[in-house]
Length: 214
Image (cartoon, rainbow, N blue to C red; front, side, top):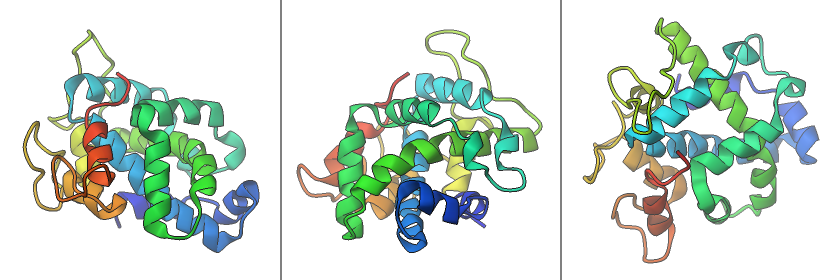
C-alpha cells in the first residue's frame, strides 16, 4: 500500500464530502488530486537542506494519533493547514490548483482549494507516525541551514512513500520512478526542465522545487 493509499484509508470520506458540500465521488476525486500534490510538494522542498529542516520541524509539531482509528475532522486544525499549504507551495498555490483542475477536467478546483487545508495537517501527522515507526523523531532546525533530507530524514521517507527511493538530486534529473517522475505524472507536466510545455505545468513545478517557505 502506497503512502497515498494509507492516508486515504484513514479519511472519513463521507464527512469530508459533507464539509465540502459535494458528493462522495467528487470528494474522492479531489482527494486523489490534492493528496499526491501535497506529498510531492513537500518532497520537492525536502530536496533542499533548509527546506527539509523546516519540514521536519513542522512534522515534529503534529501528533500521529490524529490518524489512529481514522481521522476525526473535528480534530483537524484548518488554520494550521492553510499555513502548511502556503509553506509547501509558496506563492504558487493557485497555479497548482488550476493545474490539478485542468488535468482532472472535472471543474473541482474550488473543492481542492477548500480540501488542501484539511489534508495538510493530516499529512504531517501521518509523516510524524512514519518517523515514530522508524524509532526516531524529526530533527528540529539547529541553524539557518540545518537539517537534512537524507540519512533516514524527511526526504527519504517522502521518497519511499511516493515510490521513488528518495528525492531527486539537486540540479539533475530525477531518478526513474522518483519524485520528479511523480510530479510529472500527478500534475501532467515535466519537472526540472522536463517535457512540459512552456509556461505550463513544467514551469510551475520547476519553480516549486525547493522554492517553498523555509
